[in-house]
Length: 515
Image (cartoon, rainbow, N blue to C red; front, top):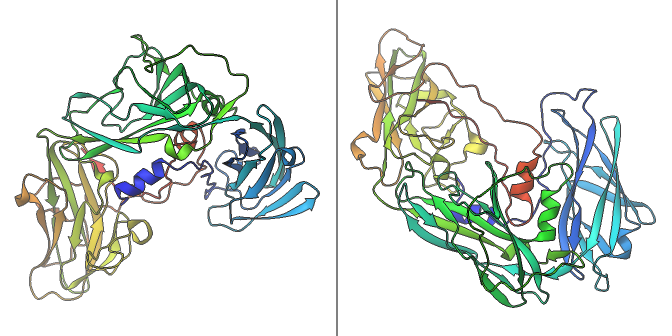
């Protein structure tokens, strides 16, 4: 699983070109070829990262594509540099670049690139980057507007923390922004992305909550160069009553110039949907001078230093009791029998399974048997090995003696997870058993953290196993699994990938839950 440091790095990733087109369904003739590309602002003598993504709208997989880029206008104000190894490009003619996609298991990926504005480029000047794409027997065109902008540098603390108990409302720290550039910043936008267990609980009139995405606060304050500004009130979040004591909830706060945010909010393909503004007082920045109108657009020249990870450590006394679930079956040498391993959350807290750094359970296969069919949520586990556990690449591999299994989401109290196995009995002189062991920090009841998987001598019984008498589980049939394959696009990508808060595409298989 991802370490906290890895998730923090991903949260600050300023790369928006994580578009993947993948599907097992062939393209339909009605599905058009589409180009996704964002307009961009660049300060003189600075660079920005951008992308061009051709894809088949719908569920079609684009296997191959070409891009022809007209750089004739852009060359006057900026230099263009490729930032990908999945495309091969060569000049077709003067100031024109012809690019062909290279083979890739996911289909055609985005063409990523850097634009660096020339030192003498005048703020306010614009240029069009022309794009022509071909693929799937179709052609599409688009242009990207490149605008030279005045540079500012918004900064905030990279990481802060606070403590709060389940059910409490707490004010987030990390409420300071600094303009470290040479130009005043004429208004700023704050974006807050919350852990679902610590949602926004404010009612400020200049803050809009966009459901499931973010809270957006707009300020008209002019931030003077080399000055810091603090929010007049802390942004409140309310911890869910099911939050488990001892975990950390990561919330992200980042700052934008108004012009940078406008590119995201008003994107023609995936505009930010309207949010719900508060009805209370206005949230302000202290030491607010009179605002003035901008004569040229402004852009943040370093988006890596304007976001803050706010870690809310959950206190109180609200643990989760995770009980192991085993099963029993019978057979003779040569039989193939089904067993299951699992867990039940006895509460009272929710188990934040996706935050765990290792498996939620380990499963030791009974001696004398071999796992020949394995749940895809389980992978061979060697806690002392160089790579002890990799469920993404090795999920479902047979033949191991010990498995680690993952769980998706946040199972609430009363929810169970189950992992089916098919065992071949190679040797059986008497009853044999393996173990299911749960792994959850601060579990208050160690006595129910281990359950047995028992194989008894008897008539062959290849069907569903009996419950081990220790909790639930869905048992029986193998789960439906497989990779979810689709184009990653839309407003979720815009909000999570643009600028100062990136997003992660992870191949995560489904775990079966029963309440």
